Structures are given as structure tokens and as C-alpha cells.
Length: 163
Length: 163
DNA sequence: AAGTAATTGTTGCAATGCAACAAATCGCCC
DNA sequence: GGGCGATTTGTTGCATTGCAACAATTACTT
Image (cartoon, rainbow over the protein chains, first blue to last red):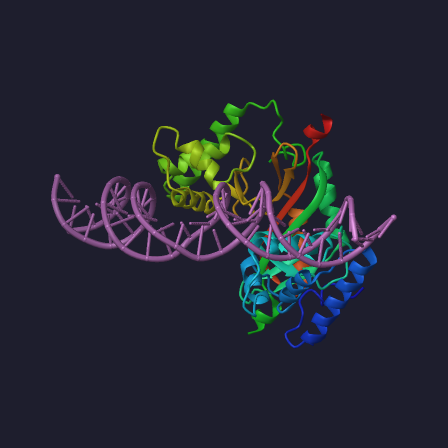
């Protein structure tokens, strides 16, 4: 478990090939362990999302996966995304109707805050138990039984502010 | 300013006509004060949203506003919604692609948590400075300059749990 | 090898959202 | 009160997002 603040955004000069390979390896291991099938299509969709740290729309994914001639139908992509989300490998960014590969190894139930840069589109991921607690408590104080908190914050990332 | 927890959800037996009238009066006063025009269409859209405490899609609003014959075009509704959101009279529920009238009198910049009941669809609104602070701090710790935090929590409301 | 379950393909369409231009309306100033 | 710029609304048209329903295929089990 790394320090959360500094690892929120991937640095612009990080080893992205390595980052991608690690994520794919993790996905493979996790599916193996759960007896879930990481089929070629699912793998391709995950790989497409891993090409950037920006959220991609389903139709962007179609273009990235359907390189050699026949491109998959939208429903195919959505089904793969459903699978990947159920297994915590991909997150949906609600405020963008888009999807992003998860590069952290947190459990499916973990609480996550997304930091969305309005300038470069990059998305940082902060997982904080404390915030989750606070939100859950506030919800329960209102007599509400919380399930999945969605927290998305728009703004400008450190890198873009520097420029 | 009322206690936040208890006012998160409107009680099922609240005086809804009064609730609606108050919200419309507030909207009128606010637009008056800001020299903004609460035109008939904008008023109708707000009124449509005020008929329930559930978020409505744009096309549901069309059906509710276009009663006597000619129904407004989608773009008309979206424009009215833009206006109402800019003035803090309506919120967008990102995880539902839907809209809800704001029945609290907070300022536009105020931080709000939405509690979305999966069973009855009602949306409770909790405004907590403390949570906003915590989120902003977490964002800043990651070198991120936050703008508008979106927090939406799905779950089951007190009323539905009782049933 | 047969049978069952899971995955993918095909077709089609519903829902969401808005661009671009034209027409109407409002507010203001002379 | 008429003209003028600014705001609002109407019209047309379309891009994007998302998925239902059924058929075909592939994988897994026994």
C-alpha cells in the first residue's frame, strides 16, 4: 500500500508500458483466482483503457479495439465493461459517461475518490478510508443505509497548474 | 438553517403543496434579486421537478410540461435546466442522468451530498461543510485544485427500510 | 460426446444531449 | 413610442450513449 496522495495521479514520465503490463498481469491473476474468464475481448477493452489515464467513452473504446477491420458492436464493449467493473478492474466516471482502468489494487468494496482534471482529462484516484467513514456516517445519520458512494471532483491537476 | 440529518429526506407526509409553493417563491425572489428572468418555461420545468422528490430525466420533464397539446422540444428543456442549475435551483444527479429541484436554500457553491434511494427513488440532500473540507483537503494533498465535488450515495432510505 | 453454462454476434432501437440557425421577445435609450 | 441590441425560444437535425432480445458460438463438466 503506497502513500495515497502522491500516487493519486500517475506522473507524466512514469514507465507506462510497465504500468500497463502490471495492470494486465494483475487482472489475469485476479480472474484466475476468482475463476473468472478474462477473454480476449475483455482483455482488449482493458488494454484500450490502459493506453491512457483519461476516461474513455464506450465508442472510443470501440475505435481502439477494432483496429484491424471489423470493429466490435457497442453492446460487446458494454458487456466487457460490465464484467471488468464487477471485478473492480474498471471504474465508471459518472460525470463523464466514461470509463477508466483501475491501476490500484483495492478491493471492489473500497471507497474511491476520483480527481478529474478539466484541462488534460487525467483522472487521479484517491482511496481514503477516513472519507468513506465520514460519508457513511453522514448517510446513516439521515437514516440512510449507504451502498456505493460515488465521489468525483473536477479541478486542475498539479501538472497542469505547473504549466 | 435546520438540522441537516433530519431534513435530508422530505417526510412522506409533508405538506407538499406548501413545499412546492415555497420553492417557487424562493426561485422567484432569487431571480428577482439577481436580475435573472424566471420565464414561463423555466418556471414550468422547475414546477415539474417539484412535483416529486425523485430525479426526473429531461424527457420525463417534457411529458410533464407539455400537457396541453404541444410539448416543448428537448433542447428547450435542457436550456431551462441549464439556467436553473446555474442559479442553484436544480441539481443534476450524474449517476442517473437526471435532475432534481433543490429545496434547500444553500448558495450555489455549497457542497452537497445526495442520498439516492434505490427502492423509492427519492433523493435526500445533505449539505455538510465538514465533508466538503475533508474532500477538498484530500484533493489538495494530491496537488489538485478542486472545483465542484460530486457526491452521490446509493442505498435505502429510512422510510423504505421501515417497510 | 452430450449437455449445460457462459460468452459473443446480430439486429434494432430507445434515451440522452446538444449544435446551428431562425424567429420572437424583452429592456433600454433616445 | 419606435428602434436596437440582447436574451430567450422555436425548428430542424443529428451525434452520442446505452441496451434489449434472440441466435450462434465457445467453453466447461461429466
